[in-house]
Image 1: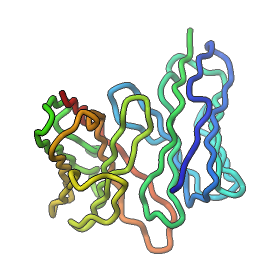
Image 2 (image 1 turned 180 degrees about the vertical axis):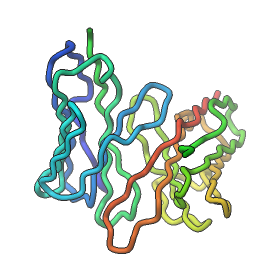
Image 3 (image 1 turned 90 degrees about the vertical axis):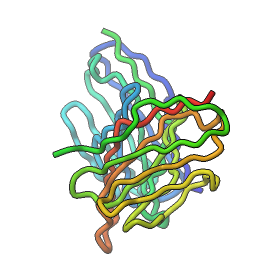
Image 4 (image 1 turned 30 degrees about the horizontal axis):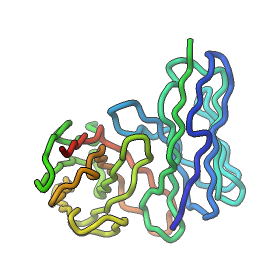
Length: 112
Length: 117
């Protein structure tokens, strides 16, 4: 069974601060996706990383896929209240077809 | 371009009843996956449908069943509801993997909030 561990589980910071969310596993993933979810809504895809060591930037968000494709991180620079939400990482295993294995999520609150 | 749609938005049932949830995939997508998300947790994979057949299944009992129609829309059925089935049920659509590709992007609908009393 593939597991994805996300940390921290909860994060409350002030506007303007930087933060990093981690997603770790002992398994190798073919690709890894990051989602953001608002209360009562479905997850919205932010980015997909495929290549080990890959770095992708989306405005103030930087996503990195580990060299061994077992871990990933999400870094937010100068967080804003609009960044508040549940951030989920989800991996596609090398032998699990196209099913997504999700982490437990990181609930981010950015206070004005 | 319509995204993934799900119905109903909310549903309240009692223990032992049966429920059917519906999903229409994003335009151009042919694969539908269903996930269960309990409060405060990440989504858990239930099963995936492609070409009107169940292609993959997660660790869920047979009370959970599904169907995919020729227009790629899908239904999730849950029989003999338990209190523990209360959750947000998410449908995600994607395009069948290209041979040799490890790329898989799934787009989620807004979910159906099921409450079992």
